[in-house]
Image (cartoon, rainbow, N blue to C red; front, side, top):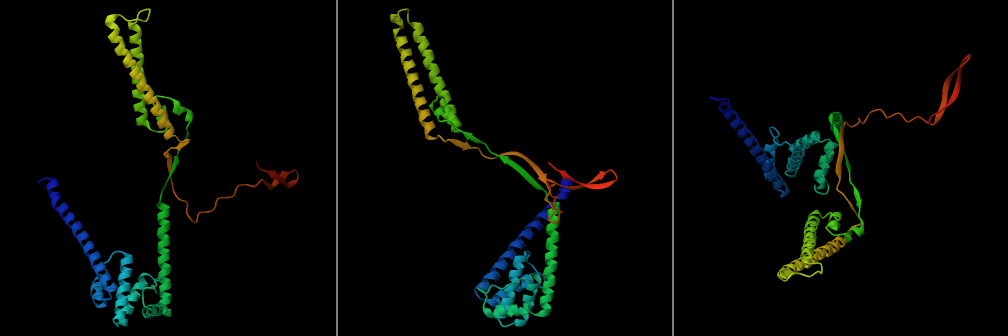
Length: 307
């Protein structure tokens, strides 16, 4: 049996575990949202039935915000149903999780807010919550410093170019105005077609000139050929002129005095952020000051200038 065949059951088991975990997470989220809806619709008995399995005997939720919301809803649901003992227990768990937590007075009735504030104001609990918050902030600060010490910052340098345009270039043929305006495809098309039409015009003119004698007359049997090339010459010249006129008009229509190119990456470097408590850099030396000087028979002071 090959190693790939032996590893197949393990891979399938891993995939099954991952799929099961995702399904449980989705189911837990659905149950939490259903409990929230029951609470918002003031079905506090059903809300208690659905919230309690999410928190007891072990917490099933994973996000702190969801746990805090579930504790708050469960504690308030107990309060609204008259069970202040269980309400106090849940609200205490909420405060142990978030010592600075407050109930929203715009959403929560005053009796419930007063009950919660009375719990928070108990001297022994207040001191304990302050200690929990200090330890929490210290842990957060230590984690922040650890991440800053390990973090590496990539500094990227960018630049972009500003190009000035000249309106006189719009008078030129062969797609030059289009290249200046950034219309590369249109410029290539005008350059190719304009160049071909001018080449045909010149070649037709040379053929017509070659068919003529010294008196610029044509033999009877070459007259038709000369007329055909003359028509080709004039037609190609007309095409060249039309393309030139179109290029000039298009160039002036899209003309801008200048354009700014997109940012281009020049270079990059990786640096570590300086610590928040690092010693400040020493100030630059001043323009001058008194310095000790060795002089015959002792020590003196002198004035030193710095440039």
